[in-house]
Length: 359
Image 1 (cartoon, rainbow, N blue to C red):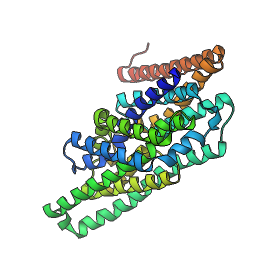
Image 2 (image 1 turned 135 degrees about the horizontal axis):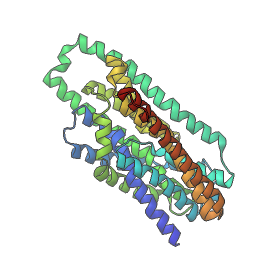
Image 3 (image 1 turned 180 degrees about the vertical axis):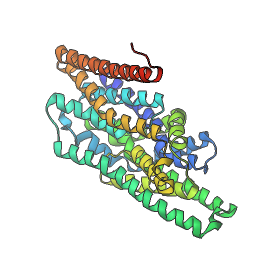
Image 4 (image 1 turned 45 degrees about the vertical axis):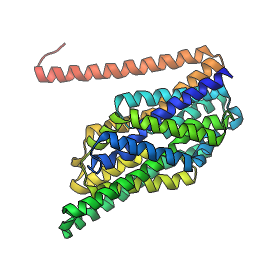
């Protein structure tokens, strides 16, 4: 029973961090385009919308997370605690760094790590989910790019859209569409926190979604500021009409995925849509490449990191296999050492060529 309570606490902590991360993806367009002037107001709107999305439409994805990746009979309080702890650690670090991160990826990665340790995975389902992690952001980029080209022509043909009256209408529309994007985030992401609990029958679906929705909303309002700032201000600048395109693209794609029970990366959909708009406007040079590179690296690494953490915790606490844990730690230390050594060598080379000096 103690493990059950601890797992529930970790799930709620994870849900708060999901809200913090989801805030960037779901309301950053309305904030970044200037439709919502104050960051505080943007986060409050985001929190309300995420809660409603979780309560109204979060059950389908929760079912997938709870029983569609590994057999639900493998789940107990200890295993659920390992899954949630692995995912929460990965997401918390990303939030501290202000990087928008896909909670779907790290949660699925954590569950897959458990499945590998237990040698029980629904491979076909995992491949479908992973495929949509690529397909949905790619579709988001394409739609935003094409609509961005259309917007450019519309702005040239109808300059009156820049008048104050038209801008007021667009501002309201951007906020409404942003609200629905945050709503879609609640639908898709609440499952990441409460799905394992539901799969293990530690909590009912209705109770889990209600508590998870509350914690996600709280996390969005109080912890989402850094990630919101990163996604809204540091990638590229966009107008109100472009903001409608970005938010509309993200919300429609994620709501459709949620209806079919697919956990998809809303953060990636929004970020790639922002990139698509930027490229359509002024070419690839309009996007801040350093920020994009940093985000993409985290996207790639995060599911692997959570997988390794959950696999290691399973071997340590369930299988009592300390030797495997030692191997994992050794590989991790060697990897960091190699990366550090490569960085040092590159710095030495730059110093050599810039200063004309050797060692």
